Length: 176
Image 1: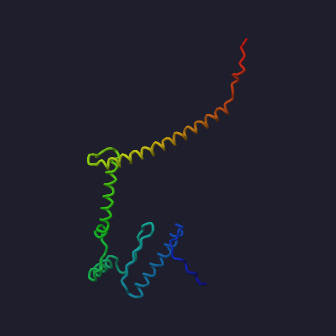
Image 2: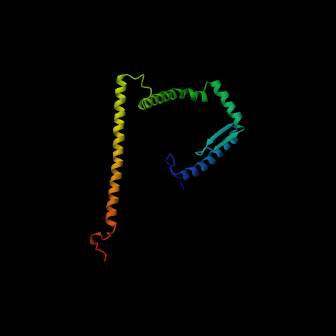
Image 3: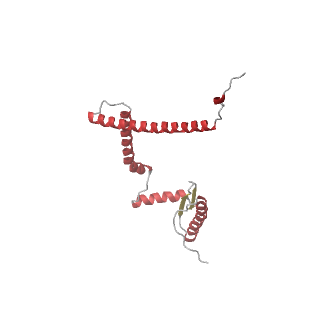
């Protein structure tokens, strides 16, 4: 029986994905072992599961293989990504985000009426328009909520009037 080709894409079902990972991981480790024995090669294989668990195979020793790889890459000019290189790569993004945070904090302080001494008339007018617009939106939302509450109370009142029995007050007779 010939197996059909499967489409290579992420398996959406988490349980099926885990089962497939376990089976294929075992197959991969077996192939690595076979290659190291049959061809007498030094090999290191590192796999992290979706849950973060580490699986590895090495022949003869992972530490020895990693040291050899590092030495080889230095001799050939291949760079190994280090934490310092990652940090240097992320520094511009970090700087950009810090600047955005400072701008947002400054804007927040101005909205609260703090640190206005350095603002020009134009900036103050713009800030005033923003505050007025915000106030209009707050008042509109507050009005909507109050109108909904009034409507609900009116409905409750109507239900109460219709469900409350009359006490016969219209036919009161003097007691003899």
